[in-house]
Structures are given as structure tokens and as C-alpha cells.
Length: 59
Image (cartoon, rainbow, N blue to C red):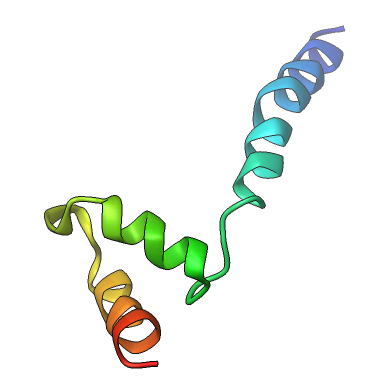
């Protein structure tokens, strides 16, 4: 019984998060560049900054 409850809780919490995470725009797309441009630059990771320079500035 407890296992069924745990599996149900898992399905109702983790699976929607995975589904929504799949909706992120592809790195280098116009939408991705626009989203990153709106994000404060202090919150960018090193990889995001490098990808932004590579895909959005130097096309």
C-alpha cells in the first residue's frame, strides 16, 4: 500500500516537471537568445555566456 502511494506521489510531482523541462528552447535558437537576453547577466552560467556569444552575437 505504501509503495503505491509513493509511486503515485512520484508520478504526480516528478513526471510533470520532466515534461515541462522538455519545453525549453534549443540553445542558439532565436527564442533562447531572447530568453537569455532578458535574464540578468549576473545569473548566467559560464556555458550560457559562451553559447550566447557563439550563437547570438557571432552568427
